[in-house]
Image 1 (cartoon, rainbow, N blue to C red):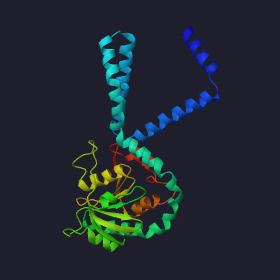
Image 2 (cartoon, rainbow, N blue to C red; image 1 turned 120 degrees about the vertical axis):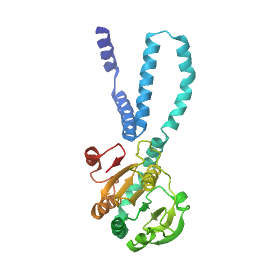
Image 3 (cartoon, rainbow, N blue to C red; image 1 turned 45 degrees about the vertical axis):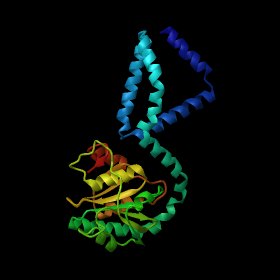
Image 4 (spheres, one colour; image 1 turned 180 degrees about the vertical axis):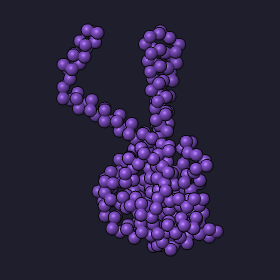
Length: 284
């Protein structure tokens, strides 16, 4: 015990202001990584990695297992190379956030011009919800969606409630797929989107529209609005999360929040997520 205290005192005696900054930077890096991985599948993988490291440290430190130590030394480089592959979605999302940081300065200019689009989406979703017509509307933000726009039918038209409602009427040529909006215009309809790969989602609770909305929000910073064909429920997805059971007023408020600077999350999302979430990904 005395030896331990002596070592601690020795470390603090050698600690200077550069060492404090160094420790704070390392702490900030690990804290940022934990925040990015919160409520994702990477948390489970991280627990497994931590358990593996602890077991390896105990076995290597307490027992002289030569063959086991050789195996670890041989496989450690491969494991380090596998980490970027395993955590690819989280790493990609972090780099995209860094790349979008400078763009947030000009983001506030969109609020006024976006209001007619927000109103049109709200009115259209309310009408579609009342008639139980399914819909999927994607709003492009900083990350381009050209590869998904090219899968649909090019339109390049003004966004109106009548046009959105007509597109998603059953048995019409463009109702099957997503509508993508860019810079306040409807650029493409009947677009094919990637489905979410989250294995924790219930197949019964999530149809293809909801999975596609989650998928595009995982791959980009886009905001997707969904109207359920079975229940008429209106939902919104962003950053791999979903909030459900919205009315037209709440839908407008949420969409407007994405056009204000320094406010790119759901209003009240942290509190609501703790109170209402059924899983780590979906709120009903």
